[in-house]
Image (tube, rainbow, N blue to C red; front, top):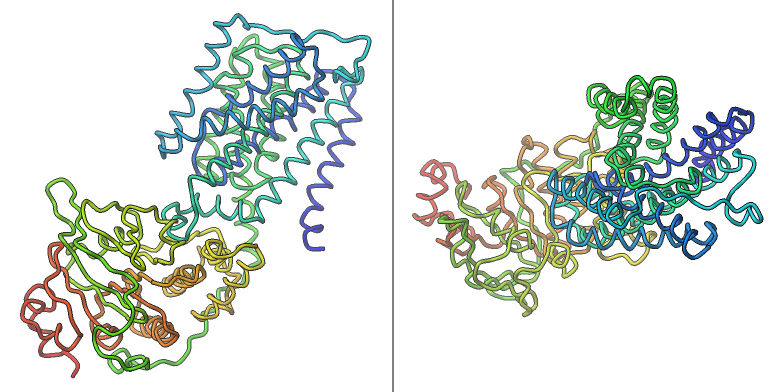
Length: 590
């Protein structure tokens, strides 16, 4: 029922647009009515890749043009019906998307955008070289319906609306699925998505393949509507710019964005081109340029998000602070009650041997070796720049070691990608928080559960359990961008827990927290320890650390200087000199 209600505005809009199109009698305005859903579909195809992953594509005309020429040449040389050619165009667009994406996804940011721009321009020159400067579809008077050559142009509008509605429904299904959640996570923080177990390359390839298929299909239909195809009209820069502009103007990362952008910009651009195009050549490009400038200045994420945030602020009451369980002061936190064991007891889960990594002449990590045993809490400490976070980045795959081994259950995992190490059982939080800000706490944590869950229902269950373990159940529906630092820290911890890791790497989980907030987070870590979680933690809050960990690993200039139990390590002169300082001796807890 809830899904039906959410679809109601889309169905009402489509029905009203269909009724309006049926009342239009002018042939030019009827063509404009058809072009609005055409460009909306093209914008939705662009949005599926760029809106949901954040990788801006300037080259979607490549897929659109391939679809247009497939329909035109297939009809000319093979006398095939567009009803058959449009699905073929979608298939070829998808194949092109995969082939283009595989090498291009090695790039990011503006490098990716510029690389994508090269593809349609290259294909444009190929088609011109092949002699297809202007291809006209043959008129089929004997069987016009089979060749989509309708006497009534309103049928083109209805068919374009049907394709738009199908694309919107497909996008909505993707949004609510593992596919969409993975793409949104990649967009908002690709490193965090990888650490949560998402194979970012695989999901991006799926996105560009499907995006290329949709663009190819609507490109094929566009050729049928206009009956004339030229390289510039389907591969030109303005074509890619229109897909980008309608999506960005209306709102990226939402099904309504490209629709809103098309409804506003396409009639405006087409009408001005008809009225003033002869006097001001290229006025369509001016309109799209002004639209982009306006969006950047007024609503950087588009009209949809601007309006949604405006109305949410008006109806949302002030945030209520999340409940906090009573805990002990930091100076008197009791060591978690776990089975007593002697130092060195327990199965070795993680065995790090002679791990090293250099950046030019800087040796960030030098021959680090240690063993992490099941149910142990290992504290990794040292001065700023000692190599602690670099060590974590080596352990969960964000950096490849220069030398050394990372043995997980006796198997070398050195150089594996973050999502592979997450799947193997290594969870991670970050010193600088990496939330998915436009997603709720629940959805943030569900992303972390996908690495272990086979179904969406199982992912929701694992996420719910992880959220409960960190005490955020009461605010699970809150958007991450509205959370306090403490709540974000706990949410990231829950996201790591949702993947059911065997080893948890906590990188300065207490950073940025006040005294009472730090107490709450420490209490959560203590509960995890009592439940048998194996933890390696980097932290500067030594008062809590000495009562929390089983052992310390002390780094300085990338090398291990001391390893041992807290009582011995904190009294070691080398540790006092390199990290703790003489004040620690006077104020250290006994």
